[in-house]
Length: 109
Length: 113
Image (cartoon, rainbow over all chains, first blue to last red; front, top):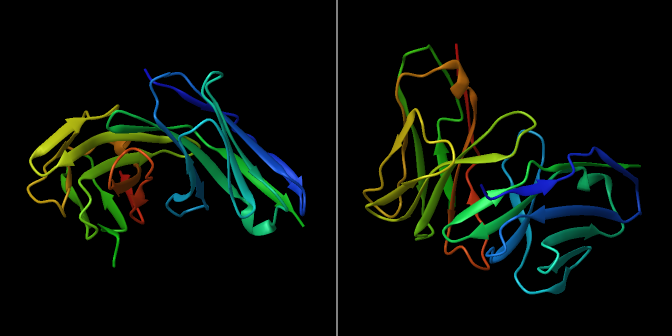
């Protein structure tokens, strides 16, 4: 069983703060790592992907990958109320993607 | 581009009925997937396909069947619906599994009563 673990939250941060979302995975053979945002009642949408150790930045979002520790994180800088959603971590291994259960984030105005 | 199109958006089935959830993509993606998402839970893979004529089981395939006769279409068949199949179903496609994520359809909310 390939597992992807996330804290379910809820995580609450004030507007303008940094939100930090974490994810661990069990399969060392995992190749690519993804963060999706899912608003209530909507389908997931891809925010970022990363496949090399280190940081990858895209606007207010930074993904961090540490393959030795089997750990991937997402930082959201200058959090906005529109960032309130569930964030899903996904890991690809072979032909499949494995999803965590998601972390619920609330940004308080 | 329409992306990934799922139909219907909502459906209520009676126990024992059957139905097909439709999924079509116009991005020429080889990889297509069916997931179910239960409240407060993550996405569970039902079936997937790496190309026309090739399908394989995911984590929770029991009670479902799929076919992939064309690159564009990947229908999911529910036989003898049960209350445990009440869920939101998402179809997704991807160009590859490395460095690209999924494009998801808008989902089908299915209730079995």
